[in-house]
Image (cartoon, rainbow, N blue to C red; front, side):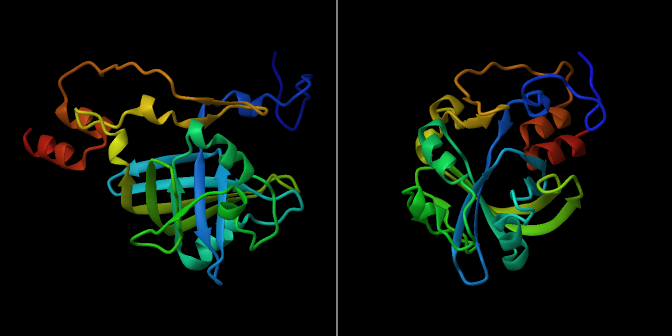
Length: 227
């Protein structure tokens, strides 16, 4: 099949676009507003941007009435947000926190989640989530789209603190992704989770390249100096 988005119809019962870029990690973003009220929401367009310094982004479309999402406004107003890893065990809470609610409603309480204090920022962390990034807001890129929901705010933040549950680190000092079972978004109403893994190492003997893929700034710098 072939179609041009917004120009020619795809002819399918459901739009296939979001089901073509899969799986997508979930940005489970916690914030506080200027009054200190807590907010929590999942975004399926989330990713790390670079590792030195560590920067992440999440993309938020508008609400059904065309308003900007609370997470975006809060991050911009307070300059802070937290990413919480969504897992299969927490899937129901993730889904509950996705409901479109009025500003000021505490999704932590609505989903029955425990708030954990952060160290460097004000937003709380999700109890039971195995990994958290405390982030300071950098900037927002706004991409206009068709109303009411098409416009997207892409929010960037620098990671200033990382929390990892000791229970998900194996005896080699690696994060045990199979123990975590990270949740990921598919298309339509579908999700998946990580339940297998395999390793591939890029050919060649570039220690700097491999260190970059690992995400180790110190190793990459040492390898570069050692040329």
